[in-house]
Length: 481
Image 1 (cartoon, one colour):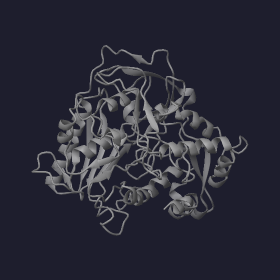
Image 2 (tube, helix red, strand yellow):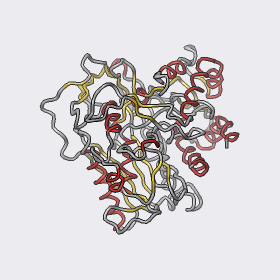
Image 3 (cartoon, rainbow, N blue to C red):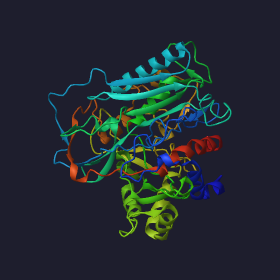
Image 4 (cartoon, rainbow, N blue to C red):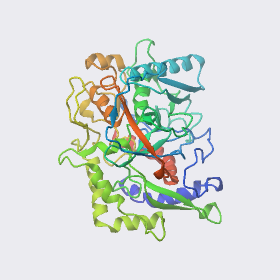
């Protein structure tokens, strides 16, 4: 597996040339919302293990996708000025009477469809009981047969796949430290702003497998092979709300970088189209809080070392292979990228989410350990989950593994949940990212700065990775979990 992954960059180019079409190629500054036509035979899914005792949530949590598995960056992205008071009390602010809205598509039986929709509603209630939702979060949800709509030629490869959810769009703003950051649409809608962007029609895109062995609240006794549907979707919705990382092995399997900013250079025909790297995207808001657990060094320092490598000003862009060579020729950048990979694959909770100094109930944990036990690095599982050391705590929800045969109510009862399904550490993470909570219901105030509104560019490398990684994560899951 490791030897196969070393040739990953060459595989990218080969698969890219095979998959790209003329309809995709428009060299503009903003990624169109639907550069690929949705293919009913190609659902946006992610893999889970075939282990009888635990299943990983291998969702594409670090890239946001629309229905066509494309990372979508809204054309109307804007930057925002940092202001002196990041949090401002809104005395007249009212919660939305309908915190979540669902656009539901279901191809299963009417009984299963009703159970699934009710499961979504219960998940919505669980999340909104811990957070203050001022602007409704719109979820585009599908409960469909992955067997009948899979890229695979057989149902065997999808029967253990549960589903995924992710942010539909991200927007650029300036955080309180003056840095450019990408916020998920669901979160930026909760902020107080002097102007509003043109939002995508949904905030979160979700698909779940009607063929999976789900147990629904209200069913009879739960078997040892079943997974609690409400548990799965609650976990995935949190990813769609911004529990996501942009760190990934985009260029080489042996090091990690932030997300590159890419465009497509159109050739004389679709076979001559070429990936061009223009630089780097801003980090996700989640990434700005990550630190080396031992040295307490922010991962943003490594990010800055890596993203200092950019195409020459005379060209503004470089081919994928040329940019990779440039990146790897910098000992400082390459060392930083390899250090992040080492931390992300060292099973001693090497990376943590650092919560700013504030108190949430009885929780005073400054550092929350993240998932770093998987080696090699698994995009969609590594970093963007809580450590498995939190299994027998109130923060069980966002671990990378899901136990089958146990329901949310059992886990909550066993762990003496004080804050509902969302544990205190998870609530603190969401609050740090900007979500209003019961403990701190104030909105973050942002003032748009339209002078720096052009952040978004084509992310066709991300498109390609979105097509490839469901396959890769299946292989990794079978081997490592």
